[in-house]
Length: 214
Image (cartoon, rainbow, N blue to C red):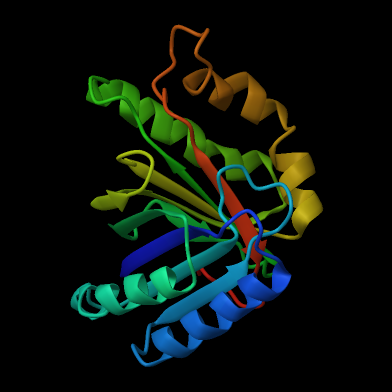
């Protein structure tokens, strides 16, 4: 499955009506592409570098996205998007969907591992991320993928996606869980010798009425 995600930033003076109009027009445009799955929503309060609108599309073949990418960019220009952070990737097999219940919040994290990082360290970092759902029950589905093409503030290398039970399940049990700050945070902490993520990250999330990853 080929995936494309865009975190779209609107001008600072934009209001909710501007986000809603962009969401409406993006949904109309992308519906013609017949994606396997589509999620286009305003982001929720609390995102960090996460944009005002999150667009996530999945296709059986990447050509469907590439043939329409210019039309999407033209639409974003028409809506005065000031910045777009995005990734394109083939969904990794490193993911799972729990059968307990579907999530109501989709979250994506775009990050860049330093280019001089030894591959064994990258693999340990990836393993630590994938260990988190074993301990955090509010994660209903997850997937970690390496990026094939990126745009925006950094040359992103990874995208870490989850579906959460609700917003509290993201802001509480996930971000505050010991497995997060005791095992995962060290890869992001500039004062820790294990740090490999040196650029800023994009932490974005939005409502989701349907399964995204399963």
